Image (cartoon, rainbow, N blue to C red; front, side, top):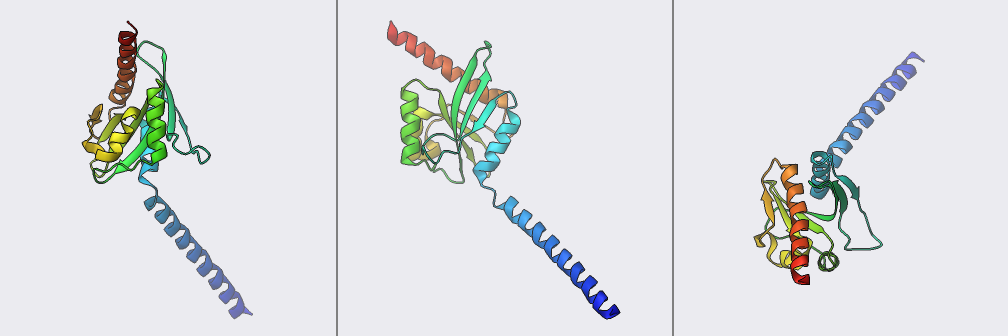
Length: 178
């Protein structure tokens, strides 16, 4: 009976060790297979604590950007933006036809939306207006961005670009009304 007990204990120890290794390997694989855009989102959220971000996972309305954010601008008024996140190792930026359509249409209607592109492996951040979606899908990061922010990203600079684009558009609207 002692031999059966020893085998049972050995068997339990073996199984515990096996499942521990399997769990560790699963965690390593999950970490390594995290999508670049997921890592991009987590980093963006981490460096912009003053922005109230909402992550949008919309299968019912394809084309809607990944994020909606609200923050207080320099004048204290809220700035509301939609943001599409993209990562690229090359110059190409993969936008679907629905993403192009939504971003362009929303921008044309007066909405404030951006496409943020992280270049890998350098991790530079390219900021584009949503109205540039079609051109961006064709010419990639060769499209002239509103700004390029090198890594490590300066969150103040990023929000400044977004807010200044809002004021630029407001001044254009006032000029066309005259």
